[in-house]
Length: 399
Image (cartoon, rainbow, N blue to C red):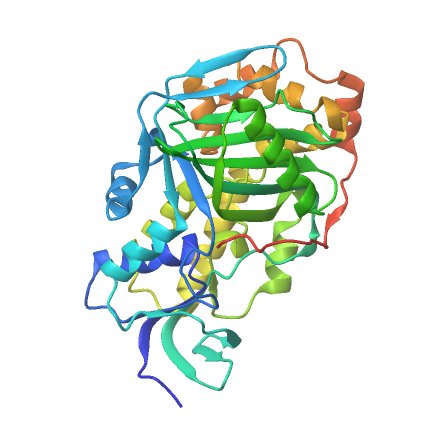
């Protein structure tokens, strides 16, 4: 069975794929776009957060249809040596609201959920069951592919959406609470006040292995909530295991995974922040790029996005270097010291860091001063190699 030929077939309804579909719809409603997602909902079970300053005007317009939470009072961070309140406006989007807005904004014929892709080529995709979708342009945004072309560590997390039995009194996010026991990793707890009686509490680890011990992390969230005086009932959970890329060969990866004539976006194209796994500004940038070049044939769109991925890789080299020092120069229980020092810096510098837009002056300021790790170990870490990112347990990052 074949469907009529579409202008675009987008494979993967995560952040990257969904925003590309929306950007195309807003740029030209006459375009025929098919968005294919293997899961039941677009965006999976996820939450994306960013600073208000991360997005250009066009990016703000693209994100306007989504229901978002916004904290104009700024956010807090806590470390054993110090705590700080920063005034940056923080924003967050839940996948349930991502799914709802896309179903409202896109044409009814666009979204195809619970449809796994069996094979892909430059002319379209064949779904499991044999259905064929033909398209002028095919964009694959189905998520990161494990590859020994890259090396690094892992970011492992468990989040809990909690309804408290009384108002919790938290009026702004706690983006990083690293006063907790470190457990042989850089560990911090991240908390968002979603409503007067709702919290999102996430326990995060920068660790050497991809193991996610669900029972242990859940128990630690219990203890953290008890310590903070938050009692109540869980509403939902979220878990993830994400690569923290500290080095590698992007060109080799592109050669290995490239399907001639098929464009790649999102984590599949390695378009993300290598150290923080920050994705939303990157996904918005890619979506706008595709929409601006929507008349290109598929082969040229594939070349355009491959070149875009190379530009992102080049501009994020500084963060891979910092990741090498985080994992290679600091003992696991001492890794938090790197972020403790970093969060003493200028708030605007911190915002640019997360959006991978650090200026030369930002980079110099980040590296100067009393080093949080021994210099000889930092040099050895930069000269050495991390394990290849070829095995993982846990969830697939949303593309």
